[in-house]
Amino acid sequence: MSGPNTNLLEVQNLSIAFGAGRDAKPVVQDVSFSIAPGEKFALVGESGSGKTVTALSLLRLNQDAGYSGKILFDGKDLLQQSELAMRAVRGNDIAMVFQEPMTALNPLFAIGNQIAEVLMLHQGLSNRAAALRTVELLAQTGIAEPARRAGAFPHQLSGGQRQRAMIAMALACQPKLLIADEPTTALDVTIQVQILELLNRLQREENMAVLVISHDLNLVRHFADRVGVMEGGHLIETARSSDLFDHPREAYTRKLLASHPQRLVEAADEGEGSDAEAAPGPLLSAEGLRCTFQIKRGWWRKETFVAVDETDLVLPRGQTLGIVGESGSGKTTLGMALLRLSSAAVNGRITYEGHRLDSMSSAAIRPLRAGMQVVFQDPFASLSPRRTVGQIVGEGLALHQPQLDPAAQREAIAGALREVGLEADILARYPHAFSGGQRQRIAIARALILKPALLLLDEPTSSLDVSVQQQVLSLLAGLQRKYGMSFLFISHDLAVIRAMAHEVMVMKDGKVVERGPVETVLKAPAHPYTQRLLAASTYAITSAVSF
Image (cartoon, rainbow, N blue to C red):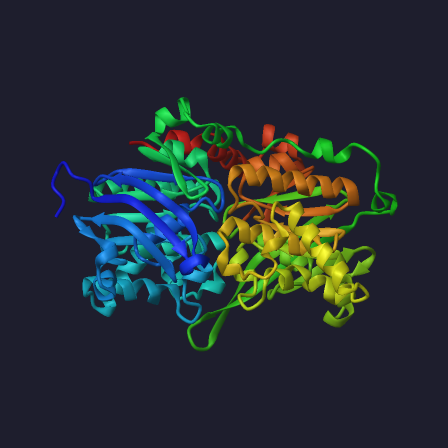
């Protein structure tokens, strides 16, 4: 066992490669770092830098990977342990919060059952004790009505709620080391603070070490004791957090620290107009929109849940409407309802390009789909694991532009990938071969390839590192300027909304509590809820996370 002056984790000269022989592809090379008991250590770097692969190697979760070096945990080399021994380590001594909760949670079981299973397996709790502890854990992570949510299935929760359920599951057995891969990516700013405070408190009470993988440099700066920077599979710099942010040694580190969203809509409004700008009237409007779900209360009784309540909006051509609010506020349900993609019961008037979508059949709407595209929040769940990147990105072309020959289709697909920072040599690869940020870029390329008039963006940059985030936002602004595209931009990141939106709507509990020009709402918010969101975004991580 580790002594008082030894490290809990020692990674020594770790190298990881996929494939065998001459075809082996190294993705991590000669990485060494340590984590002491109770220490908070962060790995940062752009998508594809190897930080998640390094974290997964601690639990030996990289499929078909070849390892060299040592991973010493409590004095034992995990690379030399049997699979049976590793099962005792996973979830008990070392737990992990995965980046994409929809793929990590079993869709066939309620989240409460999944958390209780961990408690019964590793701690031997009875069914009743595990169920009670599950509700406590869900409440700790900020899920409203935890007893009811314990009976919900993953698809019935918002992205932020699924992430909180994953955190509850990881903390269930009070592990010695918690690996958190982008733990706050899907969370709004107020819940981010709650999660960080929770992790801080548990870390202090249990002397739990935390390894954070993140592209959120503000989070890392105010949470981690030490930081390691990865580039191209190499660990290029390691230092105490204050030293690294104040005095970075490497040029790559300085570039990361200098990256943040810039205001882009002024640039998007300049220059020559597009054909879309000449068309009369708004592109999209809604009046009295109401979305409801029927929730079971026992065997016979059902209750109506109002997700969106009497909402009006207007989206002008060539402009961006930002929709912000906490998880569960109804913003994604609203976006899906506007495009007639929601499973909710929808009432109200929806007009797109002069067409009354609310009164049209699904078959009648289908020809309009080419002009209405979506980038979903969870790229792994929205990309078919059985199709190649070329097939995924080109699917819209094959459906809506069948007149294109194979060569023209391939060139259009390659062009779409280049626009989002990816090369055409990935066309034959599958989604599982990419990092979370790379998968999000593939999803954006799939939506942009048809140059739609309306693009619904549901947290499109949440899984992207800061440098790629600015690249994608600049790309979207440029396409808006060039083609007169209109964006419905859903995000919990107020810095992104500030960069992209012309108008902003703030939602709380299914209602719009404030709306107006983005400069007015974000500089001088009138509603207390908007003021709280803005305060959390600007100050809360700095002031609330204490050591």
